Structures are given as C-alpha cells and as structure tokens.
Length: 331
Ligand code: DGY
Image (tube, rainbow, N blue to C red; front, side, top):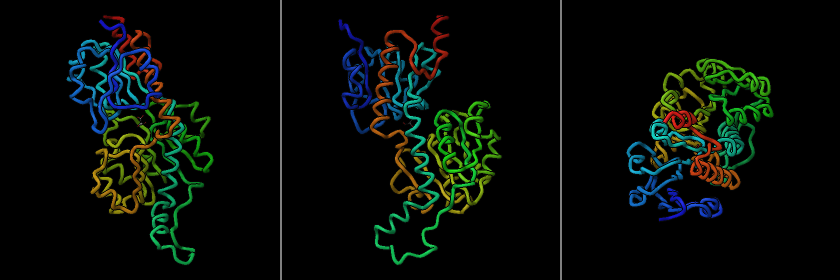
C-alpha cells in the first residue's frame, strides 16, 4: 500500500517545473517525442489518481474508463480542446488549466506576428541574409502602417484584452466580437463590439483569440475570408481548427486577403511540404505563443497547484469544468 497518490505526467518536464508533484506524490513520467498518452503507460492506469497532460494528449472517455481512481486532470495549457470535458464532468473529475499566467507572453507574440506580416520582416531578413540587399532604394521591402488602421479581435478574453491594450500604443482602432458584451473592457480599451461579419469586413488586421469549440471550429471559412478586405491580414494565435486551412491557402494564393501569420495550424505540426510554407505572404511559427522561460514555468507550477488541489478534494485554482462541483454535490 502506497501512502502517496500516483500521478501520471504524460511527457518529460524539467524537475523544478514539477517539483511540488515530485515532493507530494508518486510521479510516473511518460516518454518524449510522441503526442498522446503513451500506451506503454497502461499498466499504471488502474492506480492513477492525478493526470498531468499536455495539449497534444487526447483525454476521452476511452482513456478515462481505464483510470477508475482518477480524481483530477490538469492540463498544461489554457486551451482544453484536447479534453472531453463532458466525460470528465460525468465522472466527477475536475479539469485544471492555466489561464492568466500566459496572457502577456501570448499577447506579445501576437504583436510580433502582426508586425512581422505587415512589415514583411521575414522575407526582407531572408533577402539580406541571402545576398539580395543591393543599393538602398525607396520602394524596396515596403510594408503597411498600423497607425490609424483597424484591428479586429475575435474573442475578447484575457489574451484578446491584452492584445487590445497593446493596440493603443500602435494607434489602432479596435473592434471585437465576443459572446457577451464587455463594457468595462470597452471603456478601458476603447474597443467596440460588432458582429463578426462587420469585424471581418472593416478590419485591416483580424486576430483570433477564441477557444476551439464546436461553435468556433472553422469559423474562419471561405465565406469569412472572402468578407475580409484584400489588403487585410489574418493572425491566428488560438487553435488551428478555428480556420479552414484549405480555404486559407486559396485566400492567400488568390489574393482574397493580403497575408496571414499563424502560430497555430491545422494540422499541427504542419507537414514540411505543406503549401502554406511556400507562400511568401504567410508567416508560420510552431505554436510558441506562451514559449518564454518564465511563462512556461509559471504554467507548469500552476498546473501542479491545480492537480494537488484536486487530489486534496479542494476547488482548483482554475477549473475548466466548474459544473463538476454541482455534479459532485448532487452525487
Ligand atoms: C495554451 O495554453 O492553450 C497555448 O496554446 C499553449 O500555451
């Protein structure tokens, strides 16, 4: 009989990022390199009480049914589209996630990508490096100004708001869509709530910050892309599945929009021979929105805290399925 609960950490993490788990639980760590909860971990499933997952791990009914003692899932991400929340709730399992600590890192990268795509930074840098920097000339490597233009933020959650806050420094008008009006944010950020159709047709930069849900899957499809101005840019910091990739390729090839910057893609990773990589008006980064040393460590420690609270039967600091507590009260 073990006194400490068994926790499965699905992939290797730096020791100091999961130190609280190493101190207070028995930790089994899964292998690196392959997405998903590795089948080699199956012998541990019957004893697992806490599951610490990455966004590349699918947590569904089939997996949960093999873990009869599971009491908490803690996702090392703010997004929880990899987890069947309904199945967890039905089983009385709270799901932790990591909002807040990554807000600024993701908002900063959003602006890095907005600037990269609107100023053509990558093609210009490549030309310089590859010997195509001839005599300085007024019409070379021209981008567009942001000052006075319109930024459309799809999803004004914490990250969307942080992006809007930075937009003030760039002198941009801000439109947003959101399921609910956010009067306080509107006042603070000078942002205006509009229907998605209006945002798409009026914005010079459209930046996506919604979670991936059945409602948002492929919300940026051919119709949405055709609504955008031919001079507009699309930035996706949310999840690849929010955009119809095939339609985006055509939009970029045929000039329905001017360019796109994607930190997330569908599929992910994008295969090396994907047409998006060959388009000069597309910038792709490999899902690095939260990838700073400070932020990733803060996410890891918050995920530990959520997991340990769950094991103690206490409310998680950030729970993605708070309705689980009603369910637990009723049962
Ligand atoms: C998240 O947390 O959901 C991001 O996509 C990775 O930091």
